[in-house]
Image 1 (tube, rainbow, N blue to C red):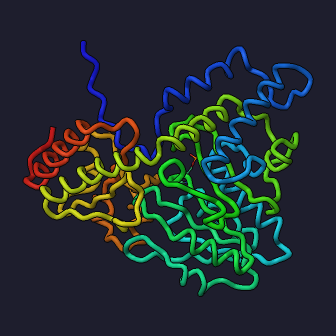
Image 2 (image 1 turned 90 degrees about the vertical axis):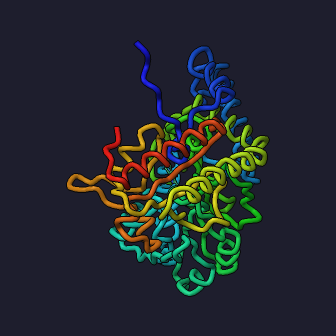
Image 3 (image 1 turned 45 degrees about the horizontal axis):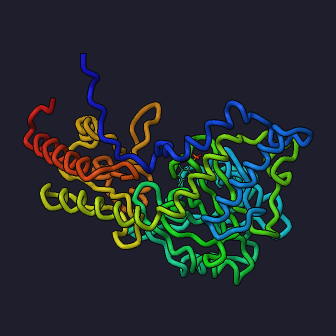
Length: 387
Ligand SMILES: *Cc1c(COP(=O)(O)O)cnc(C)c1O
C-alpha cells in the first residue's frame, strides 16, 4: 500500500510548521528542564526563568522593543483581547470611543463587538477596493474621547499592508493609543515599534514557524492596561498563569531565525508568489487578484476565478492545501467578509482562493500547483466532471 500523496501546502497564513531549529530548542524544556519559571527556590525554576528571559530578548529584538515591554500570552487572539479590553478598562476616564477597520481579523472585530456590549462606541473604517485605508480616514473620525485605534499591520486573507507609520504618527500626535494586530507581518516584514509609533502589538508564534498556543503582546513602556485574567500576577500582573516555557522558548527562537532570514526569505517568496500569480493570470482567463499588489505581504496572493462555482472549485483543488475566506455557519457557507468589504461580488468572493507560501515552499511545488489549477479550472469551465 502506498500512502496517499499529501496536497502541496500553500496555506502558511493559516499556520506554519515548526522550524526544526525551533523544535530543537524547545525539546529539553518538556523533559529534563521542566521547571516552573515562577519557582524562585531552586535550579529548575531559575533555568526556566532564564530561558524565558532569553526568549523575551529575542522577541523584543525582532520588534525594536525593550524586553520589559514583551508579555507572553497564548496567541494573537488573547493578545488582541488583552490590548483592546485592557485599554477600554484602564482608560475609561478618557472616553469610550474606538476606531478599527472592517477587514480586521475576527479576534479584533469580535472583541470590539464585546466592547460595544460594555458601552463602547466603535467606528469601523471601510477600506477602498484595494483593501487599503488612509490616514485621512482616521483623522476624520478621531474624537477627543477616542481611546484607541486598532489597525492590522497586514491582512491575513489578501496580504494588504496598511499605512501603519502614518496612522501611528497621527495617533501619537493626538495622544490616542495605537494597537496593531501584526500577526501576519511579524517575521515577514521589518517592524520597528518606535519608528511606527506603535503602543500595542499582537503576534503569534504559529504564524512564524513557532508552536501553536503561544504569542506575545508588546506594551509600550508607560501604557496602562487592565488585566483580563486574574491569578498569580505573572507577566507584571497583566497576564496571570504559569508560563508555557517550551512554547515561549520556541517563539523566541522563531523570532531570532526571522531576524536573520527574513530579508532573503521575503525575496525568494515574492519571486515564487509572482511566478504563481503571473502563471495563473496569464493562462487562466477571467481571473483577477484581490487587494493592492504593491503594498502586500511577499508570500500571498488572493485570486478570484470567474465562471466557476466557488465551493466546487475548492473541493476540486484537492492537490493543493489552500483556503478561501468563506466561513461555514450552521446553515450555509458565507463568502469572505474581507472580500465583501472590498466590494467583490458574492459569486466571485466564493470563487476566490488564497495561496500563501512559506519557508518550505519549493519552485517545484509552484509548478505543480499552477498546472493543477489550470487543469481543474479549465475542466470545470468545460463542464467536465473532475476526478
Ligand atoms: C492567526 C491570526 C490571529 C489569531 O492568532 P492565534 O494565535 O491563532 O490566536 C489573529 N490575527 C491575525 C491577523 C491572524 O492571522
